[in-house]
Image 1 (tube, rainbow, N blue to C red):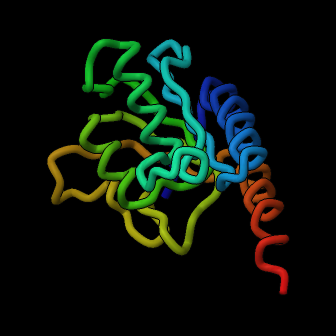
Image 2 (image 1 turned 90 degrees about the horizontal axis):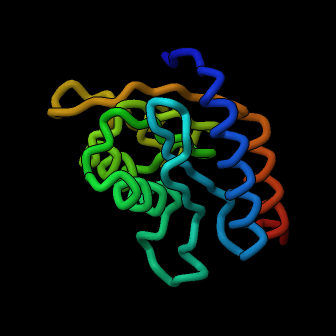
Image 3 (image 1 turned 45 degrees about the horizontal axis):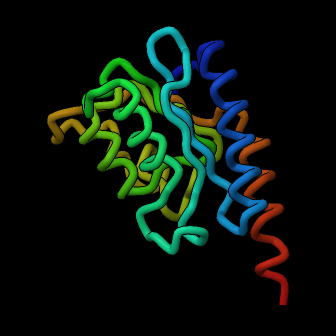
Length: 157
């Protein structure tokens, strides 16, 4: 079950969608992410750079979390919200928990690799010492459309 989105989440998702479109324009899977503070101000942002940087860890969420930690001068992002266009994978969910992010808002669900409620629910696993509030499906249609537009020509025979 997901909680409702806040107005600041919608503004942050708008920026994340722009970053995702930019990633696609550079040949990377269209995923964008931003980290917002309590006031809704963006303190970190990222887009997928795996292909550009040839780095398996260059997921949008990881880049945004690193930038936010630098900007805030702390690895602890418990008062922040991560907004991302695609449900985080297991690697990113682990990084989110290690950064103590308080809230995660995402657009498209990922039935193949999602770790925030679809395939796995790492972010809310009661066995772990930290859990994040999760809001899924925010501007889902737009996030999904970016992904479809990216993958359809690559999957055609």
